Picture 1 (cartoon, helix red, strand yellow):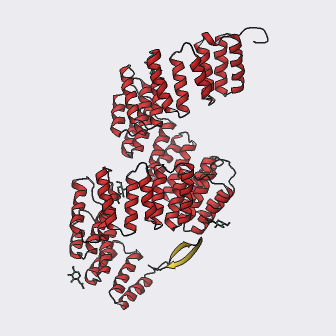
Picture 2: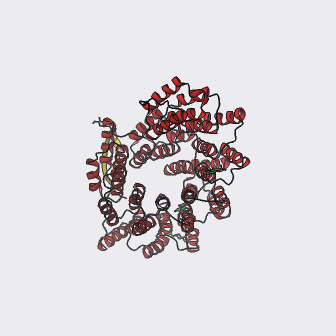
Picture 3: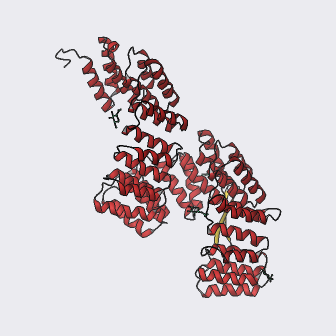
Length: 608
Ligand SMILES: *[C@@H]1O[C@H](CO)[C@@H](O)[C@H](O)[C@H]1NC(C)=O
Ligand SMILES: *[C@@H]1O[C@H](CO)[C@@H](O)[C@H](O)[C@H]1NC(C)=O
Ligand SMILES: *[C@@H]1O[C@H](CO)[C@@H](O)[C@H](O)[C@H]1NC(C)=O
Ligand SMILES: *[C@@H]1O[C@H](CO)[C@@H](O)[C@H](O)[C@H]1NC(C)=O
């Protein structure tokens, strides 16, 4: 066109710039921009300026966008939408809101559905609940209440930004029109809130389903720990010929990891190779992780050694390290971590540090944990809630309560997991009074305790300086009356442990006998352990019988009974129980233990 001497006009430029945006050709775009300036088109065409801003925005040149925008004489709603959405994609949320205010002040333009959706993305990104509610109110004011894309964006905002499930449900029920995105978002929302049954109900009610909705349900089931249901749905998807994506397969692989079933994992592994997804980095990484979880370390090592992708190296190193730790190979775990640090193959990000810190806590590797702490400090993700929780657990497991408490106090926010982590730390160190003081503080601040909090707090009464059994009883009864938590076997076991510890064996036994459901063996075991503490074989024998009736094949009961006899000075009985066990074909597996001292790992066999 240029060669034949035809002058381009503003329509030509908009068209050619749109093409540049599609193929992200910044170089050509810059040449076109130069020509536009030469021909003086820019001054009087809003469309050309908008197209240029669109191109620069997509290419990440936000300074160009702002400059062009500032120089514009006339702006329309698309100009404002372009500049605001560019700021949002650059994570400059404050600037986006500032522009929004300018827009209302200067040009008096009415926001459209695009502006509202973009602003809601900014609210979600900056976790500004109040601003999001303002945007919602504004949308209603300008008559966008019934707009489909606005409502879809609102569901996303209320799901990801501290809204409650009530907000999502109310929005969903009020929507006059819904599309596939709406239904799928609601399924994802319910799954995020852990409301699996509600999500399944919504899925069943969908007028039509596509691969997205199936995948939303599948990943949701998997993230909520429902391994077998994930697999069932997957089989249904294969039978119905639903498109299988990378997401589908990675979810199914994690579901196998949850089930820890070798057989199923082998079948899925074979299936994935057969349909030819085997050479995709995400899927290979998920395969490796599944192998480590199903105890197939040799297969995991094979995938690890022949890893040829540039991406995801951190992920597979983390999987391998945690796999070794999980499968009782801490020396391999630590040496791999060491190699990764000296070779720089592993970027220790939030997720990797959380996993490796868990490992450090479990094997008491304080120095490695400290290294990661320094790393987190330098990389600036110490304020990440998950990293904070992992650090605090690591320190408390490594017998360093001082640093655990310091981490807790320096965390910008706490959730129930943080409080539980510190409570568990105090319990681990048998600091009952400290744990109870923490519990009072938690109540004062108003953090909502969960069922685990109560297991920990009740157990704390075992390690107090004075007998506070009365307080413990009333805490236990407040569980249902105040906090609406149905006591589980774990709660009963904690209470029984406390009563037993303070010598109230009769009361403890009575409580078990009057439990509203069949007690788990752990409750009886708590009482058996109390009998050992008080060398009371009368009650002990009775209790042992109950446990053996519940779990005749569990060797740990025999060990407890044997310990009960040894503690009461009746060595021959203790020996007899062990003989009895040997006759029944139990072998007491020696526990392998290790400590790290002066940078060396020392192994020893541990007797219970
Ligand atoms: C509502 O949203 C749709 C897109 O979902 C859009 O095409 C439409 O123009 C919007 N309606 C109004 C009144 O803004
Ligand atoms: C890592 O290995 C080097 C030798 O290769 C050793 O000097 C160092 O102590 C090890 N570090 C850790 C944290 O184990
Ligand atoms: C706490 O509740 C969750 C879900 O309601 C349950 O899976 C878990 O086992 C409970 N834990 C204890 C210690 O009762
Ligand atoms: C064991 O405890 C029960 C109940 O408290 C008590 O009646 C009994 O005397 C105790 N027996 C021994 C040997 O201490």
